[in-house]
Length: 452
Image (tube, rainbow, N blue to C red; front, top):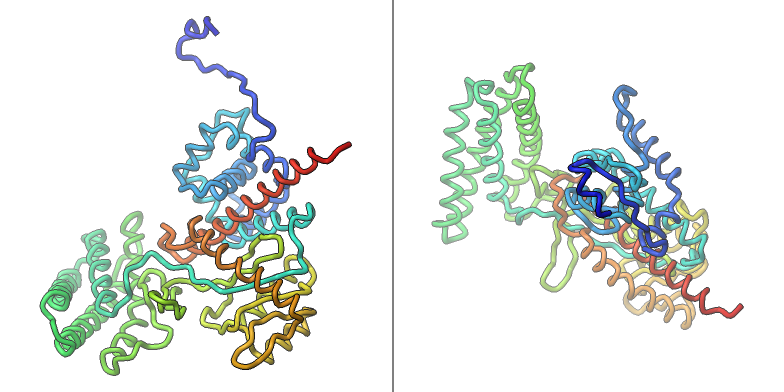
């Protein structure tokens, strides 16, 4: 070691021992990396139709995705940990390599996996936990929760203001490619901004605010008419930043064309239109009535969450987010059957799942004891012992939802709907990986204390 300075700046490898009991090392030995690589290849074949280009390093990138989920890291922190933290390099199978995937590579790989790929990785962890006996598939409790988006409060005037600001930036980026109607549209956008300022600072009564909102709506309609002509006239040859600006402007135009009618409905009636668009940039987001004290409505995506007996979780989403809770209750059992191949013997849900037709459907799916909290003067359909057991397990679901929100489930940094859904899956995976490691540690300690 005293002779190392004589080597100058040349790189040299110094062997460092890895603790075999380190959590990341133990988890590395538990995961079937060939299965994860196969999941990634199948997702790549679905997303990328062409076979041209270099194949990604599936093993290293799968490890990086697991590291990011396990530590709840952002992309640059993930790159730094995989580059400089030996257990993380070991998990990525890079401990004998000088190469490290950068943050762009990790993001592209995770985007390629998508929500479906991350869900399959989580199901692999659940299957491992079942094989070790850490969870009992005979018991299931479910609930619904909202994943809030990182957006401002979606009032109609604010949405029209966001429309104007976004369009102004796109027009500046397009430059001469938007010549012709650009100056005309910019003049109307200035009027829109002035009315927005007037609404926020000087409109003190409801009548004055509605009058300004109606004027902003009319200006927005005029802008949309000119914008439709501009989108058709933009040259097909724009590329780079201008191409992205043109595509963004087209998306905002489509969203605003749907939203402007909903804004007029509110101005005329004072009632919010059903299925109102709450974000110009994430049109899949919806307002979700929760009925909580201090938070009657949440804005984002609605998820169902399954808690398998033993403390593991699985989340799912329905095509229609405004579906009633009893529909989510039936879907929770179907998801359980899809993953584990058999229905639970006991199922618990809150009083929102109380519906005779849907409970009959649960019985048809094979559930023996349905512990849905009754409404009104109805009685539980299970025995007292089963009722108490389901109440105890059902009370734990709220705590797990809160823990997942602490892991990045709620208000993620991603500003797109697919990104929000991936963030939810990473929080789910983070929860189950942590639970799996704790169970492994407890199981090993128990085996060491058992006398020979």
